[in-house]
Image (cartoon, rainbow, N blue to C red; front, side, top):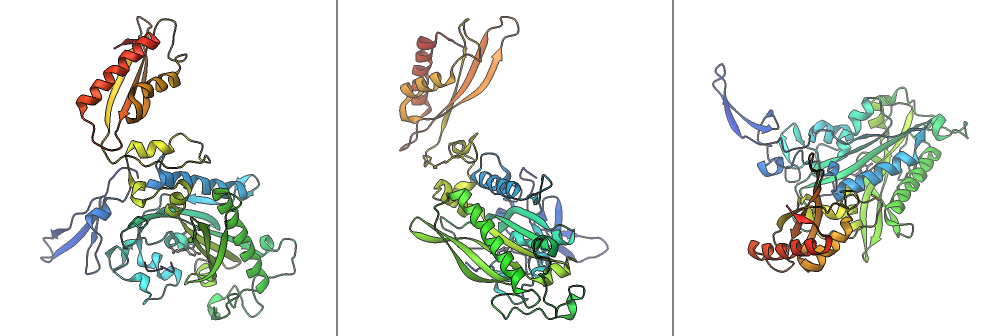
Length: 442
Ligand code: DAH
């Protein structure tokens, strides 16, 4: 993989159509994404398949592991940084993935000939627009809008090899934390963010060099080191919240066009070092171009899939896209900090049969113990019971009788069940429920 430096519902589709305009006899090819047409050109390489994933927003879907990790990360930043009781960071998790090459590259000082711009690595809509290759693509515009501390969370798109850990779409959390002199050095007012030779009011009259591995030439060493220390502490704090305080880690020097100095954080996981994030001190040109002339900032970007796969032991990245309830139910209604270990779901199809019954007069829908029912279902059905879920509660308006409906989801681990054999077991379960709980099947 090239190191780039390293609305719900499917509303997107692609139509590669030729529009004919009566005034201009020339036909114009376009790409349709959502309800918008974009002119296509020799750069266009987004495919209908890729476009069909836009809007899935896995990072916002209830019970998706990516969404759980997102919530844990956001909670960490919300609770670690507050200002007069309010969270310091604002969160942007619904920004459109269609961005300009200026946003994705130029604003971040990525050179015109940088390999990360290659058609072979990106999904271009046309020569000026692409599906964002990283969440850092929004850094500049959010800085320009006046924000200092923010998280950007969303889906990113890269053409890549296909294997159990790579998928052309994945999810990132990217962030910026900026500080003014009075914030960074509140207890040492004689220290400065900028070197005396640099005039922050006139940033363009200075060539900000990154030749010194320790710092950008405009910054003082004190400011850079203090920011580096905070950056590393904050990110290590996050990793410890996620993986436990004993997690082994190391910092590796890196190069990114948009930060200097830059690092990667690796954690030791399943007998090897795994890179989980990139970070660094934001290049002052980016801040100055966005109108932030009196701050120093750190930034980082991390991948949600890697974290979720490691945390929950999910063996294949494609599972993140699963809509199979056998997968999603494993992450359902749990405390987001609970330890969850994914259990492989059978590849054979599910059979779903419902069971509804009237409770005996001495029971109500609130006093009937569902867990007793679940145990009985499992006793009778055995291992082919994958899930049992309460589907409906009902009190008859006239008779005042109470009734419950459960869905029982059957699945065999080694073979496809036939509906006939499932019906047979379902009948046995109905009989056992009648015998044990004195209910009446509806
Ligand atoms: N955008 C980088 C990537 O996708 C990761 C990254 C590195 C983000 C450093 C940052 C940063 O915000 O400061 O590989």
